[in-house]
Length: 359
Ligand code: CP
Ligand code: NVA
Image 1: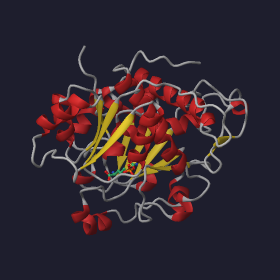
Image 2: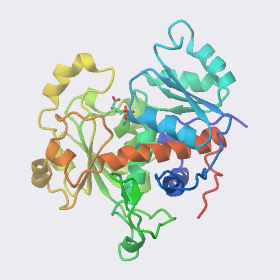
Image 3: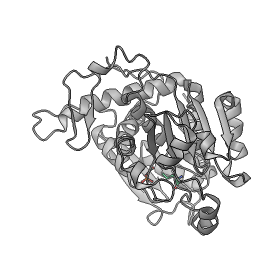
């Protein structure tokens, strides 16, 4: 059997994406009660990483992805080794090929955050163990999985009449579910109109190859300049998956947010683009997500807001970011459970299809 890798959600079928989300939801509901201060029991939901080591190769900074992966590996009974760019020889004194073979000889999985996407493709090519993308210049698959889980947990159910009473609602402030009647099955989403206002970067790219296939409409606004549009390598995947039919791309943020259930943005200056800061800030004037932008553009009255974080106030103001529409911290919390699900399936079982998701 070949070694499975995960570079982007474009590599997965919609059935596989749904299985990951169900598994993440399940792990979250089983694990959280055991982590409460008063809990008398610690029952691992899965120990597929027992005695296993996962290498975290991070050549860029990270808060969420790093904390999610270290805590997820521990909850699966394994250990994560954080290997920053200052710590190891990768790409400096040693080729990516040799590092992949050496690290893969001692660890059971590699979760890598790289600059150029080609670097993680090279790691995957030569690694004897699964490699998973923790962010590259082109893609950020684990972020969009967490976003999807957050949407499924929120009030976007396919059938409102059946769902609200049994929906568990998790309150991050006290880290507990508030209603006792947990819902073990992940509710299905109704089709959403999702607007993205900002730069065409890694997070958007994974949205482009997944949301349209899951039945949602994407409306994207970015400045009228090819550097702020999806690169050809990304667009080829979008077209191959037939996702382009459900994507509108405009330079007008007001047009993008029209009819939106959800508005999403990301930094205008991704890691590695610091030298372009001044130009980018100029080019993105008018793209800050605000209440007024969404009112003027005709977003739905109850539109919600998402951002992968870290956030600067230039791309979204405080009123939206810290306001009641914002799902940003639930999204951040869900990085842990979706990462745990994929670690379990990919590193623990080497299989993204046949995972057992208990009901
Ligand atoms: N959203 C996200 O990936 O955050 P970090 O860069 O802090 O990991
Ligand atoms: N587009 C951003 C995402 C950070 C999580 C970046 O690459 O820096």
